[in-house]
Length: 345
Image 1: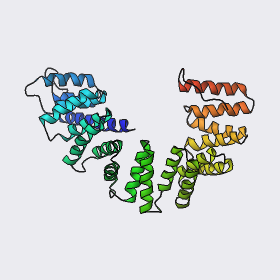
Image 2: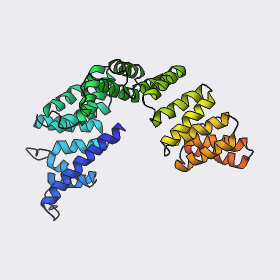
Image 3: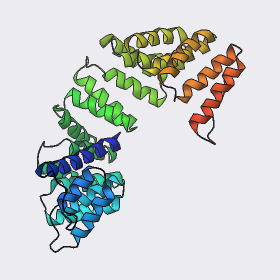
Image 4: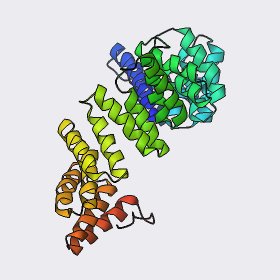
C-alpha cells in the first residue's frame, strides 16, 4: 500500500509538470535541442527512457540546468533504482539547498532501501522546510519513527496528518492502528490502552485491542475486547467479522454463526463473513448450508484459494467428488506451481 501511495504522488507530480508545459505550447518541442520542458512532458506521459535521454544530454551542460537532477531522481525512483535516485537527489539538493521535493524523495528512497535512521533527518528537514504543505513527509516520517521504536514521535507525525492533538485519545488510537499494520503488536496494544485510559468510551479502541489479542493468539482475550467494543459500537460490521472469527477459533459455533450473520447484514459486499460462515457450517456438519455461503463468496472473489479449498471440502462432504476435485485443482492453480495446497479436512 505504501509503495502505491508514493508512486501515485510521483506520477501526479510528473503529469502536472508535463501538463503545465503542454499548456504553454500546443506544438511539439523542437527535437534538435534537448530541454527540461520536453523531458517533463515525456515523463508525464510515461515515456521514461526518452525523458532520461533528454536529461542525460542536459546533465552534460555547464552549468547543469536547475531541475534536471530532481527529475532524474524521480524517474530512477519510479524504476526502483534507488541508489541512482539517491545520487540524483543528492546532487539536486547540492545545487539548491531549498529543494524540498528532492530532499523529501531522497529520504523516501532511503526508507525504501531500509536505511531508516539515515532517512529520518532528511524527512524531518523536508517537513520543516514548508510546514503542513504536504502530508507525504509526515506519513513516511511516522513510519520511519515507528521502525526505530520512536513511538511518541511516530504518533505525533501521524496525528499531524489528521489534525489531531498529538497526545489525544484519537492520536493514540490512530498510532496503534498504524503500528498493528506494521506488525508492531506490543506497541499497538500500548497505544490502544492509552487511548482508552484517556477516553474509556472511545469507539474502535477495544476492537483494536481485540485484533492485537488475536495476533498474539490470545483468543479469549480477543473475545473480551470485541464484546466490550460491541457494547460501545454495536453497528460496526468489522467488529462482528472479527468476533465471528474468534468464536470460530474457540469452537463456539453458534456464537460464531450469530456474529457472522450480523456481519453479513451490515457489510453484504465483503467476502470475509461469507467465507467464515462456510467454515462454520462445515464444522457443524451442514455442508449444504456451507455451499450456499461459499458459492456466494467465490462469485464475489473467484481468486481466493481459501474459498475454493473450503468449497472442495463441502463438495466432498456431500459426495460430489468431481466438483471437489475441480475446486482442489483450482487451489493449486491459484497458489502457483509447486506451492503446497491447504490440507483437506
